[in-house]
Image 1 (tube, rainbow over the protein chains, first blue to last red):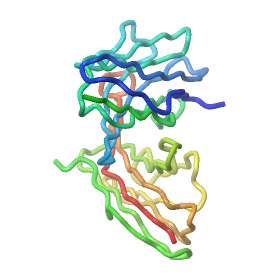
Image 2: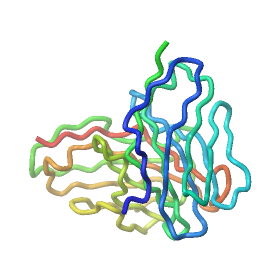
Image 3: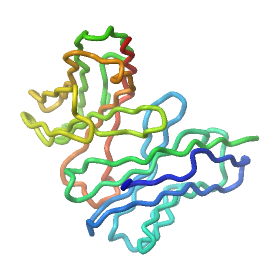
Image 4: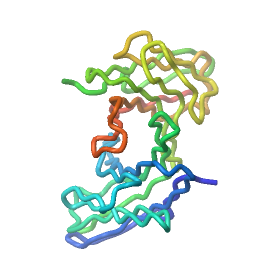
Length: 115
Length: 117
């Protein structure tokens, strides 16, 4: 079974609108971390946001927020007020406590922001 | 402070040739990782190291070897390249002791695009 599932191969959004990118995960480890990375067309991996399994509040970083629903095992990324520069590939990833901090990545969602 | 650097940026090999990819980090991180990225597959872990002189297998280790002789360097070797190893290779590093904190993330290099003909 896949540990990280991103069901949206591609998403379209208009500039200034909000968009939600879905991520569900599967783990039996009570201690884990969830991450979102952005990969623009230039290819580098840019860290966006982190959510720990014991965190009581949803993580936020500027225009990025993580909608963490532990019981449903989902960690959706919400981008508010989309900008043209947000067009990129977005990856959800998970670190389990037992894994020496190795990350398991989803297959990614391509986001296109139109004017 | 250059962060994580990778050498080379691009390389074309013929089937059966060997090569070594170099990853260097100047952040004194304990943990280092090698991933490969294929279209539609996300990143998959090849090998990783939790300290100088240590290495461990990841999800897709076959056909690769690694060495961590110095803390700041992590080398990925292909002894006999195959077309299936055509991919983009990313190196990453992470400091010890940040699990469960907002700084719990890996720092990625810019990637190496490898083509095996």
